[in-house]
Length: 455
Image 1: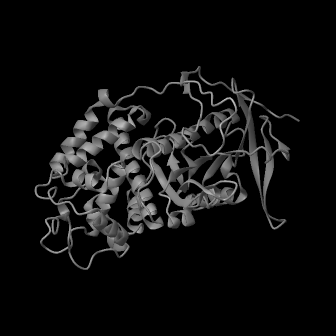
Image 2: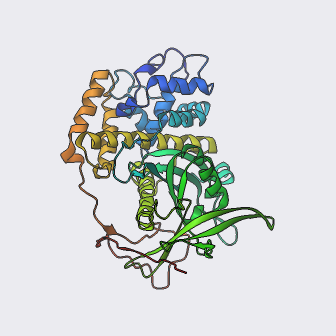
Image 3: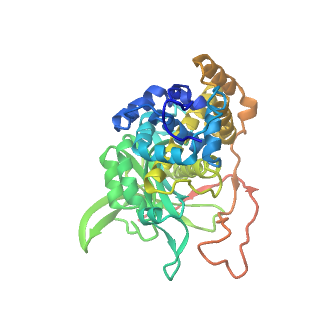
């Protein structure tokens, strides 16, 4: 047990030996030190848990989300002689996390992040524009008063809190690699559109795909204003009236922003309507600022919209595989929740980098590389301390990159599964006849049929 942070503790002065396995390739000690100094979190005196060690520890908590503080710490130092025998106690780690704060981890994410797809990667580019997607997801936080006040949560009709406070994360992800390029962290009390607006700054020269929850003049103007292009699924009541029919059967319409009953802004959009055969006749309507029907054919845009699901797969990697299915974050205060979320985003981006590296070496699509197997390999690299020398790190990465037979899950198959909440206590009451869910099944390739509107 750690009684004090004096020089007698075996961890004092040995922080340079604590590393993050394969992730050290990108989360380097120099980068971590820069982030610490930039946020003024460098300590005034040496201790067993300085800021640099805590950055590694918080990232390890994301990498080993289901493990306790003791287990995470032991995973970090088990291969370093003399450190695993005297693990600081939980309260020491908690206080050190509080001293570190969330801003350092956010800075590390922004230094590590960036587009990964090489030129020509399938699904990553459309007409020289990098394809990205904006989407949001929730993470459950511990049910403390501070978390519920900051993030909000579901409540019953009588106002009784239900389940957990919910953290809302909205991401800008690269479609071809699942890499998160930028993110905003809020809560259930924040709208997806408000969180999406700041993401526009990182989307210059990209084609950004969004679902109907992001339809709005404010989001539209922010993204197009920085030089990005957008492709958004329309709500049922938006842009339904043509103001001009185009030769290919698409049409121009307008969407407006009203504030206090006063018209503030109006933008012109191009509308593409189509249906997917076998989808019960549902008509899908897309809005885009790519107005030229010759340069940007409707059939290509309709097919491209379905790349938006790559953002869903990216979110699933974080929520289901990296964090663990239906797991709750471990942080009891809002600052530590933000810190933990940024740690998850850093780990996911580094794993995406490693997957792109492996796929590039073998000239295959990154979708074919198993995220779960790469995640497990990186966890082993931390426990084995493969970064004790640069040579060992290089050998580990080379060995992992060469294991294509183990990591390759093959080309993606056409499959579908019913979307169903799996919680035992659902937000909504069970249907009278119960939930009926079919197993995951193979399906024939989807056929898109345009629905032109002609004068």
